[in-house]
Image (cartoon, rainbow, N blue to C red; front, side, top):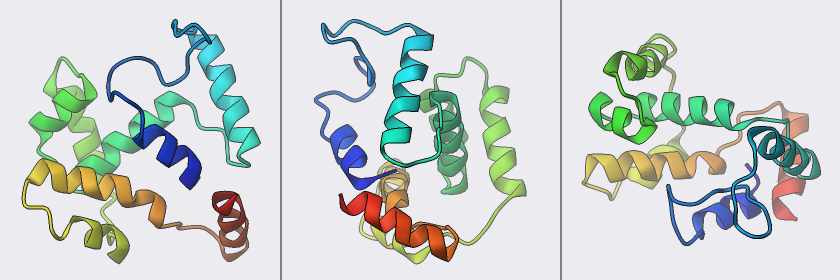
Length: 144
C-alpha cells in the first residue's frame, strides 16, 4: 500500500464507521461502484488490483500470524462463528514464516497484546517483499 494511501486511511476521523469509498454526498456506493472505485485507485497508484475481500483476508491472516487471540480476531472480523475465524488461524499456522525485523520492532514497546498486533499490522507497509526490480518501482510510487 502506498504511504500516501496508508496515511490517508490512518487519519480518517473514524475507524469501522462510515465508508472508505463513498459518494460525494457521503452515501454508500453499491458493491459494484465500490469495486470500480477501488480498481481505479489501485491502477492510478500503479498497484495490482486488490478488492476489499482480498484486503480483508490479508488483514485476518496477518493478524493471526502476528498472534492475535482468535476470539479477538473473531470480533475484529465480525464473524458470527469461531470456525469462520479459525480458517485464518489455520492458514497462518500452516504458512508460518519469519516476521521481518521492521515489523517486530514496531511492536517492541507495546505491552497490550491487541495493540501490539495492531502496531505490527500498521508496520506492514514498511516492509516490501518483492522482486528487486519491483522494489525500485514501489519506492517511486510511495515517494510520490
